[in-house]
Image (cartoon, rainbow over all chains, first blue to last red; front, side):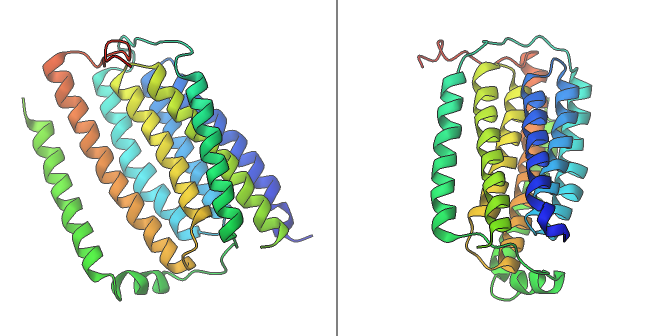
Length: 161
Length: 104
């Protein structure tokens, strides 16, 4: 049997772990451990995306999101103190959350059934760069400017006070 | 759409729906800013899964869109954490108002 036969099984295991780790992010007692769980969730999400066939997005998610953004969260939360008093309102929004999750699933399943999903073949980095730089130059330029402005904004906010 | 593709896509959709529900729960039950921000990040992971499964773009363009989305969200996270740190310096607390206090 080929590896492709096992993909649904691997996706199911990964999905179950993702739900468990997401629960740890939301319910963990210590915020530092919750932030660390977010890094694990990001890596599991990258695994799921790789199973879906988008290896470049998976690699980018690990390098940029988990490696930079989530690490920044973990370090900041560690400095602020992970065990600060945290008011909780148990079971509040539980049914709302269930309703939101169900509604989103039904909508997404309907759209996917209509559009269909096919795992892509090999996606070269050259073809992705071509998509970005041929016909979408203005978009890329605006995003680069916005990200630079975002960094300046973050630094100025953090230094204030 | 082959059986493997539809199975994997269905599992990803179910996972995304669970993550969306957990994120909504985390945002409503905790009044700590950091916990609410972490819940929003869980929601981002769900949305990224939805974008990939639901999109009808060609694979190379969808990969480019995914890279752009991840870049923008990473920038947003950095600003959000900076705002939380600045707020903590001023208020010495990370507690948000309860829904009842806001009349919800």
